[in-house]
Image (cartoon, rainbow, N blue to C red):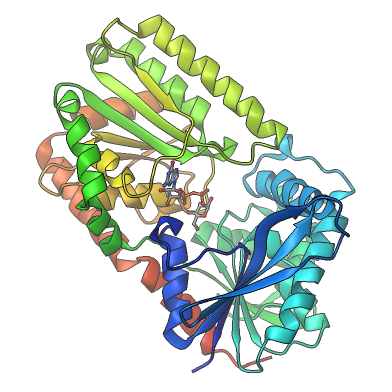
Length: 460
Ligand code: GDG
């Protein structure tokens, strides 16, 4: 069996459960045949030399973790600048928020080249390499330029937008050409694959050999949707663990009298938080029976705070929450509980289980794992209702959720009201179907089908 090499911006120690489902799933894959996980260490070196970084290696069982430091200049241009100031907003259809500073691309290329240079000597001829996400799109092209002939797969965790949106990035052609250095390109949804297919057809004159095989730039790439899932059993076990039960017990009395609406995400403009708060305010206006009862707990964990777009959003949210609480709050009830902190992973399922409704209403999302975690944490005898944005990749699978357009304040508020009033039998029926779906395509299915597809390909 070939050894697996995972390359991603951040590396997590798979032995630490706090690392989350993806780290656990990749850790499983790495430890099956022994493996190497390679990426940035998270350390920023002040005054270091661009394109240079010290490497550290540690052993976690039969998995080797190798990480490289970045100097401040590389971090600013590669991570904050090009990855999160250009690629993240544009891939989430937010051209208005992109900062097309011409200086960023140099750092992005430099760091990808440096990572490839550091990784190259660690590789064995029959290793299978799996590169993750938008930070590292050119990684395979850099490795190939250094003579790497291994099978290399890429998985994009975020959406791939339609050609005319992608074309706003000055280097769009170079980015997509870089994808042809991979053997396999995995995307989250069929919509993403359709966008890829249209882009390469229109902009690169690609020949479509079959529904997954595209030929352009002198190479053939296989592109396919592999919707990522969660570890349903692990999450169910967490739900019955001590921390989650304590969380549930501490809240269940209050929310047997009141109704809990829950939102959980990183504080990110892709997640549609202001739109959600406006829909919630509309609900209180339109359906006053919810006053004194419907309570929105919004966890918005801190994320990318060095970027202005994120600090601006934080202010907008604080102001919206303040105004809703000021307008509707009572001495003994506040409509919004906004928490700008991280909640421990072990406690999260307890919170999901108390909630009557989960509000998962991103403006765009590659997949959205919170939707799946919410389903996994419900009591099948008395499950909560998932209100899900039609613009999340998860909407292609989770058809029994209440699908909403998050830009439509009135429509979203109406759906929340439907969710709050949904009879038990319908809640059970929908939940059962949703649970089947997240079990069928869980995180183990995801990594096995991706790696099997890659392994079955001819090397080089
Ligand atoms: C990207 C794509 C795609 C959130 N707040 C807290 C917390 N979380 C955990 C959730 C969940 C994870 O973070 C978030 O995953 P999502 O999928 O919802 O979103 P992104 O972070 O944007 O992830 C996304 C994903 O990659 C995987 O491919 O689905 O579309 O954007 O697990 O539970 N965890 C803890 N405290 C928090 O406050 N412990």
